Amino acid sequence: MLTATAIVLFMCIPGLALFYGGMVRSKNILSVLMQCIGATGLITVLWTVYGYSLAFDTTGMEAGVFGLNSIIGGFDKVMFAGLTTESLTGTIPESVFATFQMTFAIITPALIVGAFAERMKFSATLLFLGLWFTFCYAPMTHMVWSGDGALMWDWGVLDFAGGTVVHINAGIAGLVAAIMLGKRKGYPTTPMPPHNLTLTLIGTAILWVGWFGFNCGSALAAGQTAGMAMLVTQICTGTAALAWMFAEWIKHGKPSLLGMASGAIAGLVGITPACGTVGPVGALVIGVSAGLLCFFFATTVKRALGYDDSLDVFGVHGVGGIVGAILTGIFAFPAMGGVWEPTEGATIASQVWIQTKSVLFTIVFTAVVSFILLKIVDLIVGLRVTAEQEEEGLDLTLHNERGYNL
Image 1 (cartoon, one colour):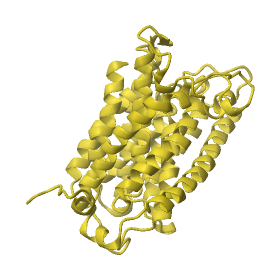
Image 2: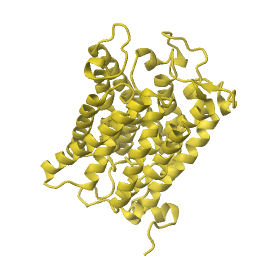
Image 3: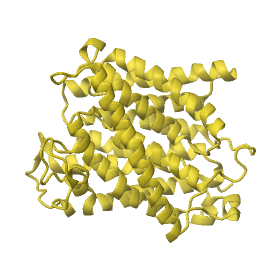
Image 4: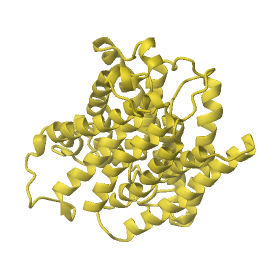
């Protein structure tokens, strides 16, 4: 768990930072790196002060009983009150569990920055991510993972490592932010190719390796569940990378490195909710589905609807999370090669409905909360940089630095 925790943090800095940084124009690379490391520092502090408590305080919760504490935790664990070297979560030290969950809380808001890359003020980014963590991420974590009495836990949702909590949550927030900020200056008529795909591939590789900490670590033990999570994570990721590559090859005549990298991330996202319950067959199907559908949304749908999701946060994380969450309801069952032990009376149809209901709830909850928070941030500091700042580049105008001094 110590290793899993460390490599999940490594997913954000430098993994996600490099993955995103290589895809923007050279004049904006530092702005993306700053947003990622800024989120890391900010969420670390907020998680310590009250985030862990809002997410995992279970005071007053009871299975089947709905109340405010089914949505959000209380304040009994503020500043890690009650956490000692002796306290346990399951069989591991609570300090390790709290830090492991902190790394999830760090990378999820950081994922959103790819949707509004190259045009949001840094001050607005920090304020929005802090508010979003408080009013969107913490409640979602509590509703899905805090145990008996939590809303979606009581529904019986299967979300092993964060399909709803992390990926759909971040993907929908990213879509709302991209639409509210508007398109980048010149989009889509001005070419905006990635400036350094070498960095993007390095970031992809770090994310791919780090994801084993993300998925296997969610078992909270080095046992059979973690072992299967590792196997299906690798299968799904490789499959999705190939699916995206071949789809692109067929449509555009050439396979691209960015396509394979995007497909790999789509596979990682797709298997996240499923990795504790599906087997190899399910991993293959989820991989193909995530690769193809994420390719379709990140290219065809985005162009058709005209929104500027800069680095395809919704197309990859939102769509991949939805695909994985729903297909989990099918392939978790032993009859479909899964390793889940169904509860009494559970059928594929009933579980698919539970999964679908959780997806729909997450979409609506996240979209509404994100919209309100962005409106508040816009009133306080304004969301978008000026046209002149955007033209010159955010590295110089917001941070007085250059990524490259040639």
